[in-house]
Length: 114
Length: 116
Image 1 (tube, rainbow over the protein chains, first blue to last red):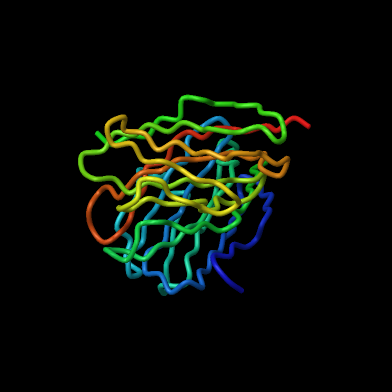
Image 2 (cartoon, helix red, strand yellow):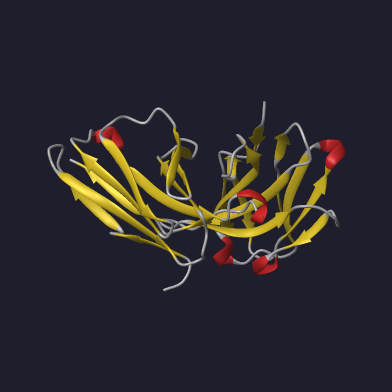
C-alpha cells in the first residue's frame, strides 16, 4: 500500500449504530487530519493530530470521536449519528513543521446515515 | 484574515480548448499555494504547489499555475483539455493556525465539465 488509505470506502449505518472509519498513511508523516465534505459546502476540517496528540477539534459534535494510536493510523468512531452527517469523510496527512505544507488525501469514506 | 476565493463555481470547456481556473487569496505573509483535483467519489490529489522561486510552476497531468503577488492570484492553466480532466478543482493556501500542523485553507472548488 502506498499513500493514504481509508476503509471502508462506503458505509451505510442507522442512527443508533456504532461504527469506525479507519485511515492509514504510509508516507512517514507526523500529522493527520479528518475532513468532512458535504455536497454544496466547503471542505470542513474536523480534527487535527500532530505526533499522535489532538491539537484541534473544530467544534465537532461529540458523536464523532477521533483516535490516533500512532503516527500512521487514525480512526473516527461514530455513534448515534444524524442524517445530516451523511457526507464524504476524508483523511489526510502531512509532515508537520517545516517539512512541507502539502497534505496528502485518502480516497474517502462515503457515509450514509439512514 | 486568511481566505481563498474561487470565483467560478462551474466551468465548461470543449475538449482540446485551453483552460484557466481562477484563484484569489488573502494571506498575511508569503503564502504557500496549492491546487488539488478531485474526481467523483475520490479524495483530493495534489496537482502542483508553489513555495518560492519561479512564479510559474509545473504540475502533473500537464497543468501549470502562475503566482502573481500583486494580484494575490494563483491561477491554474492547461493549454489543451482532455475529457479525463473533468473533475472538481480546489485551490488552497497555508499554513495557518501556527503550531506543528500544516493546516490549509481550501477554496470552495470549481467544477470543470469537458464537452466532446
